[in-house]
Length: 278
Image (cartoon, rainbow, N blue to C red):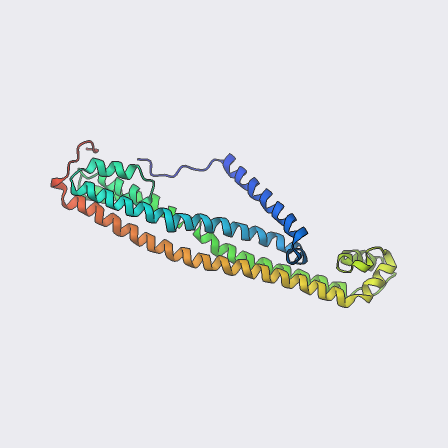
């Protein structure tokens, strides 16, 4: 039995990464042009959206795996294997495990395959299989906590940069200073009335609209904060729920493994082990 999961090739990883990037870029452009909330948040909204997309993908995959697939596979597998073992047909029980890719199936199969050996050999086979299979249940769930922290920090970063922009914009004073004239061009998007001006008149226009610049800059900062906190809170909530489910499944699989393997070991004399490794 091949217990190790098949590794994902570099070509597939590159394809997945490219697809994620294209979808992210398309969503950013769409939301920037069609949604006022996203557009007013500035560039800081873009990386937060990437974190949000990663959160949704991981959560959807983990929910399907932890809440549906494993529950269905465990119930069906446990009943089938138990029925075969009660009938003394170890080969049929092993075959039922082989047809399932669930962690419980692979662990139980490893133990039953060594049933005609000593109890120590059976336990070692079960432990070895568990080393490969149990991490499949825990994989990627921890990323949700990291995404939650990253999204919150990205929101804070966007806030700080928005405030810096606001206060730097209201500090422009000298319309004859080339440096102030250059800096003023960075704030034209905050004051549409000044877009047609250049150099000195632009600085003067920016000075006359300090309140508008300050308000727009703070608004941009608050949009990033709100979006980052929303993604961060949802990610941490999802992590808490999925992590709890993961621990429950680990205990459940350990219990199921002990019950099924012990059933076979304790009634070894009544089991037909033809075809198993000698």
